[in-house]
Length: 223
Length: 223
Ligand SMILES: N[C@@H](CCC(=O)N[C@@H](CS)C(=O)NCC(=O)O)C(=O)O
Ligand SMILES: N[C@@H](CCC(=O)N[C@@H](CS)C(=O)NCC(=O)O)C(=O)O
Image (cartoon, rainbow over all chains, first blue to last red; front, side, top):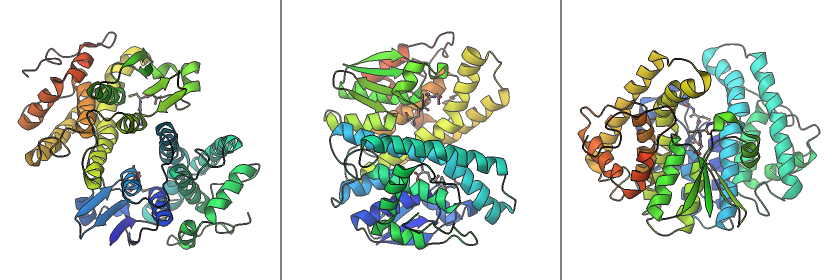
């Protein structure tokens, strides 16, 4: 049985969980708070980051969400998420990296820092300017999603792909932390409601992070 | 014909060039200085980063070194660089990400900033403390390479892989900028000389960055 080291608001763990859900791979979630820098976890992954997956029977350890996603894409044929020709796959991977790197850097990471780490770890008040910066950046990223959906059914093309899972994972954490305003982003909103209604997503949305409540319509399908 | 947008000291472009060299893929290098933020280049890649590859005849644009490497690994069977079982491939990808992220963050990026950007762009003197920090970090990374080579012929296992190319690419830029001291790293040094002697590497080593000279033994095979 696979174990997945993660915490509920880690967007990279969410991307992995969406992929495992779509592919029907069973796993046991193991709660890991990387800011505690537990020795046993550092032995598993010297960088100290989640997600990590371990299959102790087979002696396999998978480190980094992109390594995990490529592994299950290679080994589980159900619901392929890197579909199409080599250029199609390049476009999917480009968008995954874009959300994992830039959406995370500009939006998810500052929100996690201000609204989660400062509350749970540093016991500080959030910095209003950092929060406003993240929310302003979110508008630009939603504009880009609208633009992609002008030409495409899903973010990377005619089929749902890992790009949709990566984007939805980041957005869902930002949304939990009050960073997303859907106003004047009809296309992006409709796409996100489609993502939210998938069984792989429903489980994630019911989880809560200790002491941090999401907005009222976080789980709702009629935004 | 593929075009590769890059500059001589970009470690991610070097990783791509080593892969293309090993696989025998022809390409035309196009000099791009991303700090100039050229409009035409930003149209090609809105993040403004190199490497980018373009095949204008087929209308294919590949953005990000990992997207480019996966693309050529999928489309060119010669000299596979993601060899072995799914867990073997996961270990190769883990190490590639590790060098691309952490070696770059701790060593290559500060060296590029202090010794290249400050000279060519900001016209400032390098910060000695930042340089010493990078050189100290390099010792730890060489220790880890020694450790890997205690158990393995190549960094990720019994065969040369993308992990070796990623590591050699980062190290070669750090070495160009005077950040590598091979003292008491015999195993890592022997591995690196092996990498340097490959035809795919020889071309790279003869290139120079305007106004910045590498150390005397940068190209040498008898360190
Ligand atoms: N590139 C990694 C990024 C993972 C990551 O940034 N994880 C964060 C939590 S969202 C973490 O563990 N941070 C703790 C730390 O960096 O010490 C991946 O895709 O898995
Ligand atoms: N994840 C990217 C990183 C590329 C990268 O950092 N490129 C640097 C040059 S070494 C760059 O273009 N920097 C300019 C900038 O970020 O504006 C890749 O693997 O291709």
